[in-house]
Length: 325
Image 1 (tube, rainbow, N blue to C red):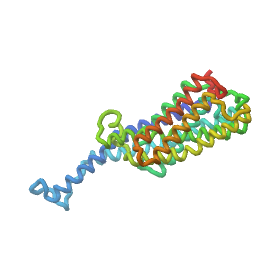
Image 2: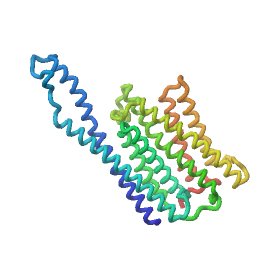
Image 3: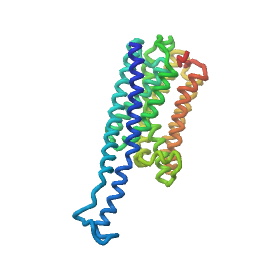
């Protein structure tokens, strides 16, 4: 089971890579429809007799060049392949987690490797739900699959450890309650960071900025939609994260005789909670610009990354279960 899980992770990474490449092809070909849309008003003017002495009439519109239609068709096919590959990668990802859990005879959340695999799966599963409800956001998938490739590959190549039993402090029913909610909230925050960064780039592009990285967002959905998605995801994840922190305090009281001790991981969890609360407060305050509030959301995700990687690698404490050695 352990070897099967490892192989499934490798296949999942390769499939995410295929999805990312397919999204990139759609992104590159995505200007075909734009060129057709720009050409259409010109044809209408010509058909109305503007700018010419004859030629095309309203009954005989200028034909769309076949290359435009072909590019648009290829872009759509690439986009559908990307979505299918993402869904297949998610299935492989889930199968890797299930087989890892069966091999370990426990929930697969006992170290950094397993935690990152689970958080990324939650993120991609939530993305597929969002995409099912709002297919117009498909081009955002390029950035989501890029994040999946980077994080899952990092887990496999850098964080991997063989299966070991849980340390005694984690052997509690609170392990399932606390860690499952932390994992779920972290996965939604991970997904929320993608449209947040997309909004910041797209908003700059819509304001006339044509330097890097704003030009990367010229084919993303509109800034308003990306900002609303960012808020919806964070508003959904924050109560779950709040419950996870409270559950962790209750577990700490039962395990160590105190609910809070400013352990490095507890401290950074509190920092993340404050930053995300600050984002939601800023988002609800009319006088705060949306791009300012969104930067706070991005900062919140950076604190989550610090809690996951920085604390586990560079600090020691009661939560030192990274399992890197």
